[in-house]
Image 1 (cartoon, rainbow over the protein chains, first blue to last red):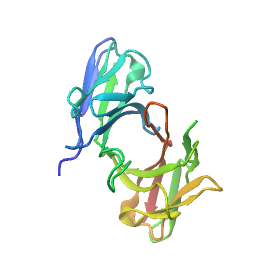
Image 2 (image 1 turned 180 degrees about the vertical axis):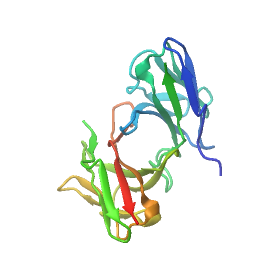
Image 3 (image 1 turned 90 degrees about the vertical axis):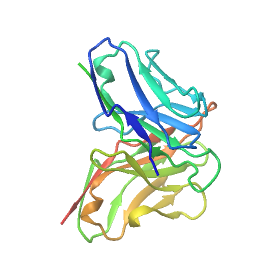
Length: 118
Length: 115
């Protein structure tokens, strides 16, 4: 079946611009995570959705970052006034219903969006 | 605070030899531990997890990991390495916060299997 997809795969923008990164999770997965991965580092947690609501947004670095998931499926990560330090690969992952089934706690990752801020 | 450490940036092993990729963790409460693999230009793929039960966990592609509570370790192992196992491996732990659940990833270990 279809996995997690992310668009665009690459995004180049200029400092100060606004960007949106999209994540399409696996159908039926209620949990959705956003991570940021810098070169040579592991994924860094940004935000976690359970359904439509952000259950934990404590990883968002500042108020320039915001994410939504209005219908409990597709999610958009929004970055305002981008800075060069925002350059990274942004990963999305989805997970089945939180406390049921053999895939409990397993995250299925998308290929990521590489963001470059010039 | 929850965290994982992968002390080796790089591990080299000859094809056919056993491999070990090390991971230690720090977590309050019961640990939920995971291993993921990342191939070039591809997303992270789940390998295995420890939630509860047997300390030896078997996962995908012949990998296994041993949970050691006294040493707070969760090392990834494979009895006989393949060239195709060459990739970047990440250990992760699921923490628990009052409002949700975060996953903490290590910095990764690059495994190279030499033919």
